[in-house]
Length: 218
Image (cartoon, rainbow, N blue to C red; front, side, top):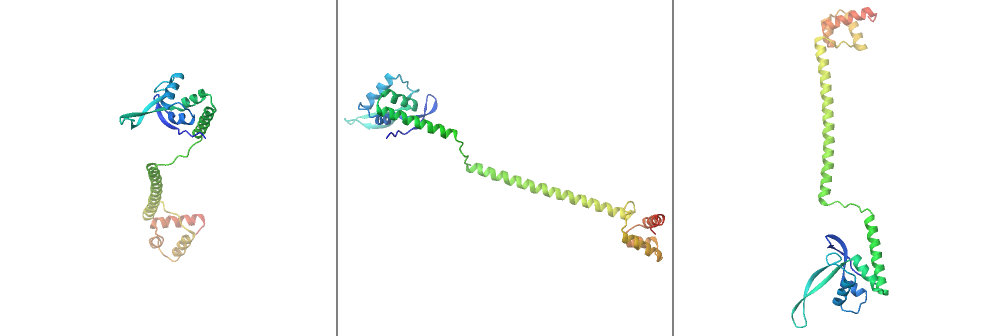
């Protein structure tokens, strides 16, 4: 079974899928030593450093004589690994090639599928703040609307009170007020007395009596 870890590395100035050539060497079942094999692949396939592969030194090992020698890893692009597998012309090479093709298809499907956005803590706090600000704005707007209505009502009643005091325009009478006006007038109450009961000026009472007599409502 082919299992080759795939990671991302910066190769040729861009992030690309890559594998460790040692893992490829192992899965291909090559008998030749890794150092000789990888040099042969680079030469025969015309691979270029920093384009098809990069070199890294992950650790230092002690040599057989106790000396310090570097262990160099060859990190090759996934496309390069697939090309090496095809060039091997072996059954193992064909398995490795199919493995990379399957991984590539799976990777393309994952890219095509939209991923749900997971909010960060900072984004979540911002959303909550926006929602609270909107709620407060709605409360403020409602309060301002209520204040405007209250002011309009106050202005209306102030006007009615003023007109009732000066007898300018508040001349509307209910049916009951008209009845009282007739009864009190017939009982001998004067305009000033009737006006005090009905909250009208004497002049407004006299005008109303005159109008009622002219229209036959008296």
